[in-house]
Image 1: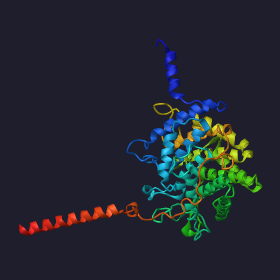
Image 2: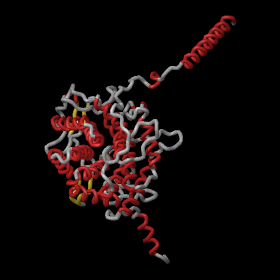
Image 3: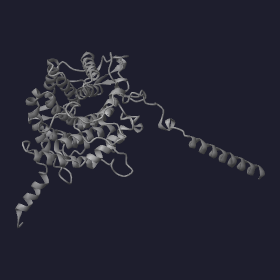
Image 4: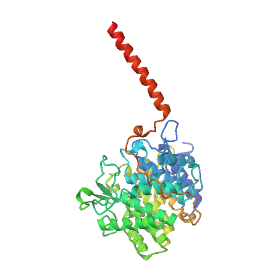
Length: 450
């Protein structure tokens, strides 16, 4: 071969596609853009005739909400508004006119945790001063408040001494399962609403959920979190699987309460305990690289679980702004994980498809929107010390709220039975009835005549 070095360069280009220097914000931003662009190749909701906000099979509705939360953060961390329009479109469409994120086409699958992940997108939009919705739509804050109100009504004291069930509707599988993520999401949302609005009711609810979580036994002696328990057995037998996102959702809630209470030592100690427990999700070799301990080592991570690491990264990052004492423990882990994750992003035709197992530091031939989102989350989390903390109403937050949002219980009847019938509808129905009567009479007469 006349120029063998050309082959070498070609081979290198096919392997090294995304580079990241964690001390160079522009390097990180470029990497985030490439990973986010790849992530959105899975999304079709912006196409004509499709449903804004939905991901195609095999992805569940909640994961789309998580994805748009990641894009709100992407805009805030990088300043790039490329995907703001589709993010706005998706959040408004799925929130509905009342802002509760309870679309009728999700009735068969929507759980409290699913609803909450969409509410997090709205809450983050309020905290980040994401461009506000147009007139005629609830504000981001109002959406988060509406979801909170619907979930507060579902707090169930008939079993287990309290808690939210996993599922909202009794006809869905999992209705009698009280899971940690649903309650952790409610705790997280309550704490963030308390901080943003200054309303003590939200803070009281956050305390109530935390106390219940400890009392019922979902938080373990080593500061991790079980998955949940059957409420038909009064939460006496636990599903002992431990996931990264359960630690993450409680971590940010506790850190936010620490911030809200001006450094209350109780919340500081709780925040620190969760962080210490979460250290099991970071490998010793390669050092400080995050992994999903319950499924990665045995290759059993299912669709939902492939994104979980991203939420721990997201919430760890914001926790450093809520409780600055955590930064020295958190940031080395996020930076090491980001570097390792970036090294897996060499797959696909554009060499920007990322791998599930960051510790391999190479692409493992996996392809999934959640895997891509998790990589984006950990990459952009390294920029957290370069942006302002989440806003509140007192520090410049502009989102409009509605403390009573979502207070009216949803009509349980199908949409077709809840449409308003107008005078014109009745007149049209009368004409149609007369026409059908003549048609039937004429047909019968013709048959008799024959």
